[in-house]
Length: 208
Image (tube, rainbow, N blue to C red; front, side):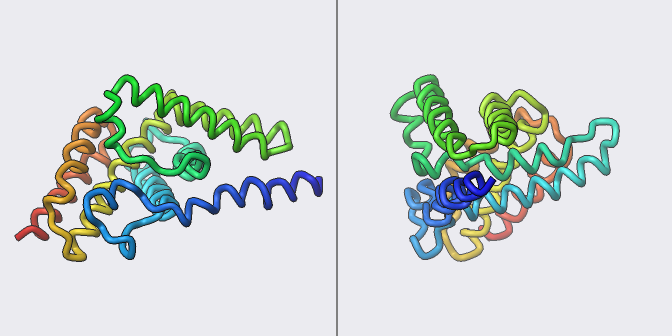
């Protein structure tokens, strides 16, 4: 038992805490200063908070289509955890490799990184639970995983608005809005779809 706790604290958590020191590369690429750029941990926290809030709202508004809040939270918390192994990489790589090769590349990285992280969990029952969560996240095989994948894009737009409110030019973030909006076209969750026009209105207000 003590060995398992030691491994978790000095192995797994030590790896995860690196996310606090890793900046999100996409913001750096478009000109956000290092003093303002969010870390991967910042993004993960905000995504998790949004996931919880919107999941609760979804379940209140659509009781016949409830989401499992625990699963949503678990996926949201770990969704960028593998990046502590290979660090963040910008979507420009997708342009260089092409979508198919990029998805294959990303899938291989996620599989390798999650396997390395799971090796730090000694308890087999806990390891199995986390492995299932990583697979569910990677394959987006549940409505909870899809919900978080959409929230991930929403958080990106919220962060872009935050940068615009700091005085950064709106045009710097056009590509983020284009790619996120295109991805969110497939979204079937009302609470997310209802939020998007509000975000667009806020962006327009900041640009006036």
